[in-house]
Length: 172
Image 1 (cartoon, rainbow, N blue to C red):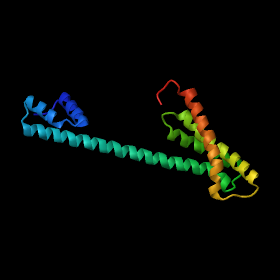
Image 2: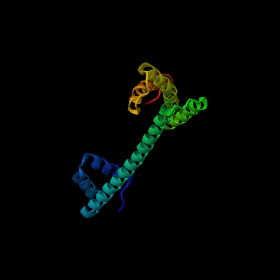
Image 3: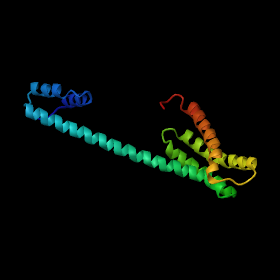
Image 4: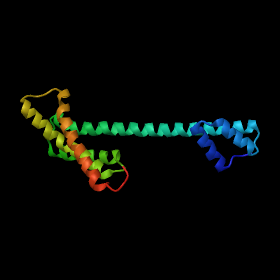
């Protein structure tokens, strides 16, 4: 005997509420033997475990890709000032590349992603040069975190404003 959709839904609910004995008894009442009911329940439990495992692996893979894209975004934003690249084409290219990465990082909210990531690449050189001019000397690479923090604050502000303007009527 095979399980119908209603029975499968009840088994799924039984898995979530951990009421296996009750559901096995319900299956027995519907004509299954106790062994068949236990076997069907175990098969559904194994199927649910497999589905949850596949979903977990897929979400981990997506998170890992997003992490690497974020690292690439930060690298592009800070590469020019840290390596003293002062060509205008570099700044234009870094802003464009950051915009593309922001688009793919925030696929559900692409305008906010492009605005925030582009502003990071656009503002970091200014904050970096401002910080150097205040300090009066070259800084260590670790000190680049201070102007990066300011740039991230501006970018976060722009992302927040973009969310409010363009996505205020949609689910976040």
